[in-house]
Every structure is written in structure tokens, then in C-alpha cells.
Length: 286
Ligand code: SF4
Image (cartoon, rainbow, N blue to C red; front, side, top):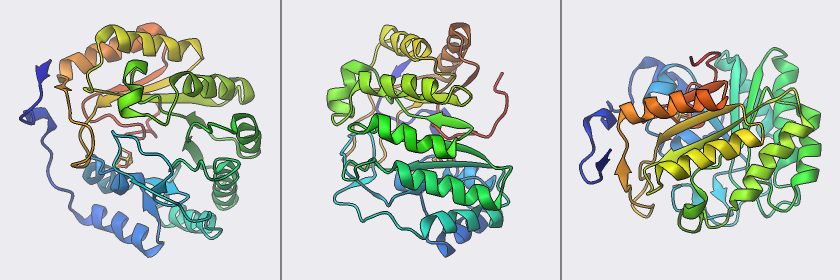
């Protein structure tokens, strides 16, 4: 590992551009859809959009929480837009998608945390594209876990994902509105509620965590039956976000990949640019 300051060479990428990138951009704009790619300043946007993939952000782009690793705006969100499921269906058709990743901001203002809107989005797209595989990346449904999961049984995804994001000791600085055990509990309960659905999580490195803490998180995730994991480098997405403490080398990410397989994860992406939805459609990562 090396310490922060200058961006290491493996983190330099070309600016997003190209015909397919522009086509993805135009389709998303014409349907007035939000993506986490843009709202979170994801470094993979050029690559993913040029491959014709994007992660849709439903329920608006204003979050009720204020996590310090994230650049999504905080405030009072608008009520769910009932036209959104149909616009997602149009996106699936226009982009000829076979795999759709849907995520949302935290909606602590809604009694079901937004679960019914997730359900409506999945079911509406599914009606038009019956073979579509869905990956939903949800908030922690802090005050409504049981009812939210019950609602989601009406629209079972291929993958249910919820990000643990960082090690428990860093929750107070990085994810102050979250609760490590609650997030683990959600993944556990999801596995029990939808036994045939794959569960997935994601962790960012470089915020000051130790190797032992990372190992503990991976073990905790396996103990709740989590099947898939992505491990990536935290990169400061906006000037008000937390600073990077360390840049982890690609070799170290490879060794985490190896360890994660040894622990029993069946699908692992561990690399500097790994993000929760990065190459989510990939069937095999070994
Ligand atoms: S990794 Fe995910 S969030 Fe980032 S650009 Fe790709 S699809 Fe979008």
C-alpha cells in the first residue's frame, strides 16, 4: 500500500466519450432517468456507458441521509414518481438490456423505505421484458425491514444487494446514519426470506481500515450467507466528502479476491475500480 496525496497511475482513466457513451447518455436524458453513475460521480461511467450499461437511481436524487463517502445530495425528497416504472421499461427496451441494476437513495421519509416503488419498477419492466435479470441494490430499510422485504417478495430479483460500505469502526465518520449490524441483519433476513435469490454486498477500501477489520467484515458477510462481494478503492467523489487515507495497490486487491473466494464467496470483483454494480451482469468472475 502507499499513502494518499498523488493519484497513483493505476487510477488514471480517460474522460468519458464515444458513440455508445453518447447514445447511453441520450437515452437516459430523453427518459428523464437518474443514475447513480452520475449522481455518485462514479469513475467507471465512461467504461460502463460505452458498454451500454448503467445503474438506474429510482425514487429521486435527494437522499434523506448524509453519508460522508457519498456525493448524492441530501434534503427533502419528492414523493415517488408513478411514471418512473414505465420509463424504466422504456429504457430496458431502448438499450436492449438483459440485466438491469436498480438502486435508490435512502428514503427514511417513506413508511416502507421505498420498497413498493422498487417492486413496481421490477414488475413493470418484467411485464415488458420477461427474461430480464434484476439486481436491486437497496437501502437498509432501517425502520421497516420486515414489511419492506415482504413487499419485495412480490417482485423477486435475481440478486438482492445491500452495501456494507466500510468496517464498523468507520461507521461514525463514513456512514453515521447507518448501523453495521442492521445492514448485516438485512442481508441475513433477505437470504431467509428469498432463499433462491443471490445476496451481494460491497466494501470500499482506503478509508483507514485495517486488514484485520476487512477480514472480519468478509467473515461477517459470509456468516449471514452473503454470496457475492465487490471490493474497491474509495475515491473522494466531491470536495466535501471524506479524504482518501490510502491507495490500495492492484496486487493487494488481487489478494483480497483470493481470500474472499477462500472464505466461500461465489462471485468476487476486487479491483481499484470495483463498485457495487461494476460488471454486475458478469456470470462468472473466476
Ligand atoms: S460501476 Fe455502476 S455506478 Fe459506476 S458507472 Fe458502472 S454501472 Fe454506473
